Length: 392
Image (cartoon, rainbow, N blue to C red):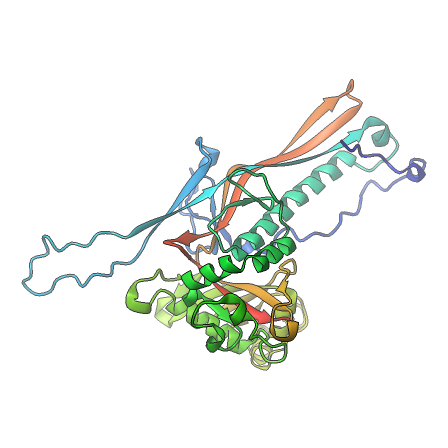
């Protein structure tokens, strides 16, 4: 067990009581997370259109899994005229997904001697770093979950069923996907109506061979672009329409009166840069967004908006791999509608403290019980169009 020690050279130095906290992006997904079910006393705060559904059912009841049911549209013809409805009723199509939770913990230990040799509040610093650590775990789990090809829940990069086995980072997870060609092929076969390889629908192999599809992507012509965005949105609108048998993707928000359907596209930095330089997207944001240096995306960092799609940069999404034509670097990104992913807490992150060795050492810890996953229904990913493009 490691003990936090103040560097010897600093023990005789008066430290400023305000310490510099390392800048860490808590989560680029936070804005798109919403409670799926309003809690006690919360009125109508539930948001069924949130891209990432947040469930807290297990905070008030025992259990390791939370069921997330989906009731799909009625597909029958009904009856018309004088035809009797009795005996011709249609059964509801009800599907279910489950989020599994497990515990995630970390801690630091501080000696009284080090606290007495500095004016810096080490306990406060420890708590802040632990909270940031938990936020980073959630962010990475969301990236892993959205990229996953299997119906699994995650806690700190591990399968939440047992919280054991390999602990993945987003980078190692992408490598694991590349090594699982049979799994990728099976995933492609089940999700052909919600996967896109670059700006050409013909890139997808008829036999659902992922490696043969992705290798068609070239560095010069298959970057993220306005064309790719429009194709991805088209897939999101039409997914599940073949023979009227599949499950549709709901938009993240919509306005029926104006015919608008909105989605969120989570992209890595290289994709975001390519989209920002796309002539059509640049022109639309230059002419259509609020003028002024302070809020305009041409001058400031921030989301891009095009054709009802919010383009959100998530720098921590790694490259998928050097699997394109001539070993071109390929990215995986996530074009999301409502309920694309789910986060369930059995216990929200809380800090704890413990004294030891006659109160000379103070331990600080953070603990949560959580599960994070991409939603799957009837063998298909529900709210995501997965997009493959080249990085440059």
